[in-house]
Image (cartoon, helix red, strand yellow):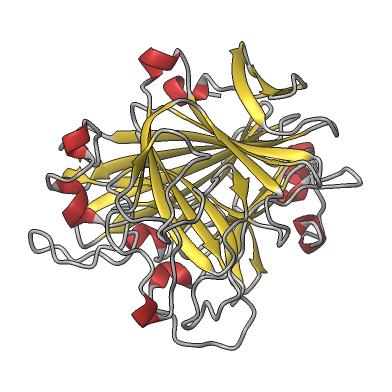
Length: 417
């Protein structure tokens, strides 16, 4: 895939930069966001020397993102649904129209039931409705795109601030929620593209309290969907997860993709910031391509990570047996079951986990989140640990290899760059 820069005839400086150089506007003031239609979706585009990122107008989905954009081997880790660029067909839910990369969900999940008079679409209005641009702002080395959306099912407003920093292969996201008063599950739906080679991607996470397979039937054969993992199983080791078929060995979820022909959902309940002494993290290492993707979060805000493991396991329209991706979704939610299950007493709350946040009137609720990529040497296999220094993160492999990345992880608590 070509860099998005080919879509922008003014080059990296852009219109705003030209006007600054000409003295017609002052640095730091908002400029109109650049727009382009990318894989069928009108999108807003921002860039720095290292990263070029597109966000869809419908749903606010982040992808494609090109990291190391000016090198001989740029990295584009995010998934884009295979039905993009096809002739229009009936799509089951608005969120699936632009489906790609990372997007913010509220209420997170399917939302199949009416709850207290509210009937939300899957993953909420914000994941499938139009966002409005507030422009792009340049402040020193930081470029920030601001988008906003107003919800109707439960009145509220969400402001999305997506920032890039010169010299860093990192995307910083801040969502500020006003109104939308009450309890709600929410979170990020980061989704990576998967190679076809089994086990090519190695997954690692920060310590978690326990993991559980979705307790309900996630993939129903009546809908031409199939799952491999045992529903409702609880476990503490990502490499030993019980499968449904008797006599078969446990599944190793540290190696992806796996279990061709199946689609599964599991959830990890993260340890707190206080217990681990720092952010919660998830990494996906692609040794064949020479990079690892990472996400960082405050586990006291987004308390769990949902794995959507999709390996050609859905055969109805528009999936048609061709979908291969991995969602590494940082949430506070009861799996992907939506508002009703998440605000009620459930198997996770009974185990001490939080599955919804409470938004109060007059008190904005803020979610800060970090995603990025770092290139790795050939001997880097899978992340064993992550070390946090001032403005930097070091990833240490199981074999002892180390790679360092400039990341302002302090943003997770401060919200400032």
